[in-house]
Length: 119
Image (cartoon, rainbow, N blue to C red; front, side, top):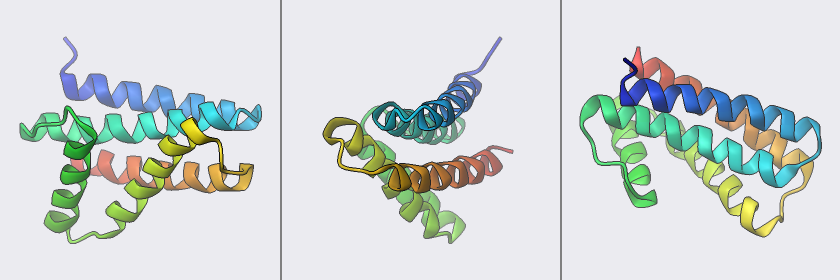
């Protein structure tokens, strides 16, 4: 049986893979949203293992702040804000390809760091 944390991690991996494909295809809006989804799901995966509430955007920001303090890693907050900007881009379409590509790198970094927290 798959735990909720594993479910979120698996979904994050799927979204990250799709984000790369969408970016390669030039679909910046979908690439942006899949990047956000991958990040949010990894935050939820960590929250599940710790029994932390994670049902709203505000919860996700609070989780990142808490982890950044706990791990003494302020970069988590910067990376998370980059992912949040990609989420906004999905609705507003203001980023160029280079911005989405840079955001994808940030998302790959934060999801990797969060994966380490789970291990």
